[in-house]
Amino acid sequence: MGSQRIIRIDVDSPVPAYRQIADAIRALMVEGALSPGDPLPTVRQLAVDLAVHHNTVAQAYRDLADEGWLDLRRGRGAVVTARSTPRPSSGAEASFRQQLRELIAKSRAAGLSPQAVAKVLAQSSQIVKETQP
Image (cartoon, rainbow, N blue to C red; front, side, top):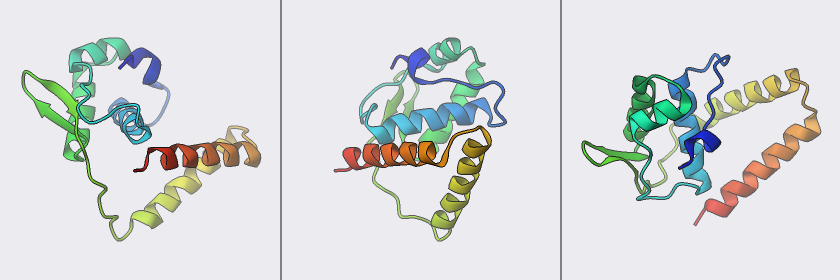
């Protein structure tokens, strides 16, 4: 995984770096860029590539392992696992709608037009359809 090209950290973001890393890796897995069995860079290597502390990457990997995305074993590193689709929690859709509203508001505040936002959403929907079995 060419981490320097695929994962970027926004140091000015209010989102902690470990969450940015976990979100980026999760997105790569959902998009199919990372498949079950693929190894991830070592914690130290990714930390060097992203210019963050190794504990930051370790936290991101632990969070992804807790979610069932990664298998972490000493001596073997982090490996992408086959993950079944979880059942949505009772408030998952409402939470998603709220997060989406906030993201759209941020994009509009950044100057993106409604058409640009809609185009990105449509492209994202296509990526999800292509990766589904």
